[in-house]
Each structure stands twice: as structure tokens, then as C-alpha cells.
Image 1 (tube, rainbow, N blue to C red):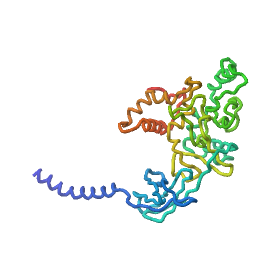
Image 2 (cartoon, rainbow, N blue to C red):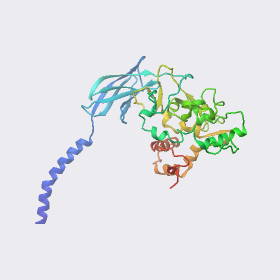
Image 3 (cartoon, rainbow, N blue to C red):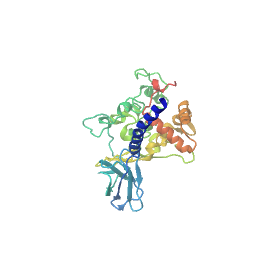
Length: 349
């Protein structure tokens, strides 16, 4: 009787389960609609442009004639499809898949550096609406971390001026004691906004003003377009710390231009692959003078227990050394934390 009861129950339940399985199968199959079109700029079709469903990993690239077909899209739902190519701002159009004949028009961003650019504050300033403090989710973390305080850190000024950490009592042994009348090159990393152009040896950390006192601030980092590294070592050249190993792209005063890590942000920002690579940090975190290592925090991090643990957790079997380094850096960035020397988050467990 029990066996018969089980068979009857299975006969009743199995069709329902099969039906549920078919429904789930349909759900798991995902979107099937597509969007096709062309990416153009002022000169005509753009080959090799990146086309993406905005804020997703679903992307493709344009053919030699600028055409594209983006598949795997939700049907009947408004989405934004973006296009980007080197030297241009990303552009986007709203579409409802499936559809065809879409045109994405790119416009070039300014190329070249404008030394007269006035740095934007990162603070929430009502008189400076473009400041990052208004809406950037990373702002509260940046404003108190080692980057946001690099130009005001009392420990730094103790070493720079030879004072106690309160800056009130002169105790000697500071840079200014050893090299009176000079500014040094500390600002090339601690206050890069003050050390650009020809000021890298004259920017006095004790005479900073305005945005310069914001340390390693948003506008500066998002104006870096390249870094100069020794191809033989992958590290900065000797005697070239901070801004002296960076190329800037400050736009004309009548426009805005920032670099960022995404190719689908359609407002005054262009994608820069360098912002997703560890080499971006190298000029200020790995440098030497006359063959003597001075600051090697990036290399030290890679070789630290934290770096080794991260490496062990990665599936590195089919990865090149460059890919491993990139993956480790991505993991570090995703934590969105930059603990200082007195921050408990930086201590070993």
C-alpha cells in the first residue's frame, strides 16, 4: 500500500515539477532581443568602437564599417546603449529592443594639456557645482584617508619642517633643517596640484593654498592620461617621482574633461584603461633616487601577506604575470579602503 501511495503521489507531483522546470528553463534562458546600428563620428563610421548595454558587461565592438549588433538584451524594456572609442567621449541612445537602424554619434574630447587650467575642488562647495563632494559615493572615504590628507598630515609636516606633530615646537631633523632655502620634491606626490609644470622643485609644502591643500584630489587624478615607466623594469625612472612621471590632459577653460574607469559614462568623462591598472599608482608608490630605493609600497604590498593571500585565492593557472598583477590591483580597489598607519583596518589579523 505504501508503495502504491508513493507512486500515486509521484504521478500527481511530477507533472507539476516538470511544468515548473519548463518555466524555470524559460526564465534561465534570459533575454534574446538584439539591437543593431552604427557608430559614427565627424569623419564617418568608427571601426573597433565599444558598444555596451549601459552599466552591464554585455558589450560588442563595431565592424570595419562601424556597424554593430548587440545581443542578449531584454525585450520590450527601455535601455541605454552606449558607444566609445579612443579619443572620444562616450555617447548613448535610449532604445527598446528589438530594434535596428540605431546611430550612436561620438564627439572627440580635447587632446593636449592646458597649464592654465584651474583645479576643481573635491569638496561640497555650492559655488563649485562640478565638485565631487556633491554626489560621489567615495567622497566620505577619500576626504579622511591618506590621499585626501596628504597635504595636511601632521606626521608629514613634522618630518618636513622638523617640528613636533602639533607643529608648535621645533625639534630639528626635518628636511628644511637639512636643506634650508629649498622646497624639495615632496609636493610631486603629496600636493601634485601645486607641483605641476615647472613647479615640481619649487612647490613648498608649507605654502600651499586652496585646492592644493586637498592633497591627491579628484580633479588631478582624473586628468592623468599616461605615466612614464621604464620598459625594462615596468617602474618609474630614477629621480622622477610623482607628477614628473605623469602626463596630464587638462582641457581648455571652456570645456570639461575627466578620465575614468568606465566606457559607458555619458557625461564629460572618457574611458582610460590606465585607471584600472596598477601602473597608475606607480609614480607615487614606487620610486628611487640615484639607484637608492626611497618608497616601494606597491612592491611591498605585492610581497606582503595580504598580497600573497590575494594571489593564493586567485585561479592563476592560465593567467600571465601582468594579468595576475591587474587582478590583485582590482581586488584592492574594489575594497575602496586606503587605511592609514594608525587605522586598525590596516593591521594584520
